[in-house]
Image (cartoon, rainbow, N blue to C red; front, side, top):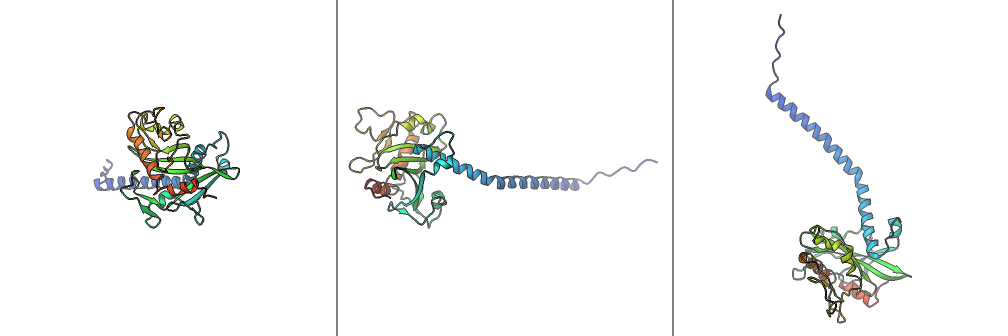
Length: 266
C-alpha cells in the first residue's frame, strides 16, 4: 500500500519560521556585541587616557621610550582655569573635568561671538585644563589644549608655551581628518620643529603668530612670529592660524597668558 504523500508546509508558515530564526540569530549576535562592548569599555578608556598622556608628555619634552607613561605623567600638574579671568580654579578636579562635554552644557559654557569665532567652534566651556611642567619647583612650561576647524575636520592639538607666556616650546596635533599626504603636514615632526622658539605676541602685546603661505624669508621682520605653510594645503594652514588667533586671544587663554607674563602664577 503506497505511503501517504506529505503536504508541503504552507508558505506563510515557512516565512514565519525563517523570520523567527533570523530574529533569534540577530538577538544572540547583538547580545554578544553589546557584552563585548561593555567588557572592552574600561580597556578602551584606559588606552585613550594613555594616548592623551603620551601626547602631553611628548609636547612637554618629557617622553622617554621604554618608560612607564603613568609614572612619567606624575611630573605633569593638570590644573583647571577660569578662561574669563585666567585664574586657577580650586574646586574642580582636573582628572574628571571634560571641557568638550562641558561645552555642550549651556550652564557650563558660553557661545563664541560670531565675529571672533574664526576657529568655528560655536561654544566653549567656561573653564579649561592646562598642564604645568615644573623645574626646580618653578613653572617651566604650560601645555594648552587647542582645537578648531581646518579644511575637512576639527584639529585637536596641544601647544607648549614657556614660562614667559610668549615663547613656543613645541606643538602637536594629535587628532584630525585632514588630507593624507597634504593637510596632514601638521602632524609631521619636521613642521612641528619650525614652531620652536617662535613668539606669540609682539612687544605691544599684539598676537602675531600665524602660518603663512609658503616659506618664511630669513629677512622677514615678522620671522619670529611666522611659521612656514605648505603649498597646496593653504586652508589647513589657515585653520591652524585661526585656532591660534582664537585660543590665544582674549576669549581664550589670553588672560591666563597675561597672568603668566606678569608672574601671577603659583
